[in-house]
Length: 137
Image 1 (cartoon, rainbow, N blue to C red):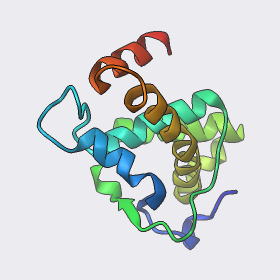
Image 2: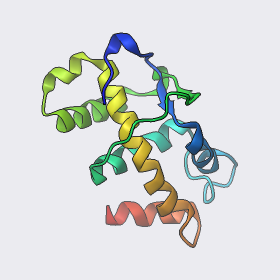
Image 3: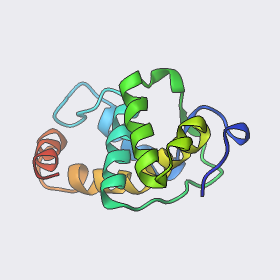
Image 4: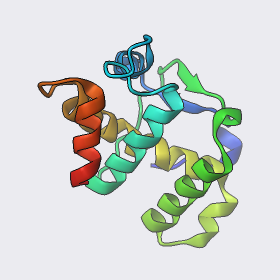
């Protein structure tokens, strides 16, 4: 399921099939309808929800949407690394940035559907659904 650092870019891949969810939650000036500022923010929530669910799925290799690594903060990377350690049970995963990113992508691939069902498909506005989701998570 994982790829080595040498065989992948340092960009995070977003499946083209779900990019509309990212756009819906980030586009627009109405924060109640689009509660996130960036795709990276949606990705981080999707990773966390996928990890919480404990399920990973590879993104198709034809996915064309990416997030540059430069937009991730040190705190973002700390969380992604912690998830990679918890997933593999091996601190040596920290030496393989590609594997850390692949693990995050795989959790996000599952978690984005949790984001969609919890924020977009529920009655009400996505911002308030997000608050509710975070209160029970």
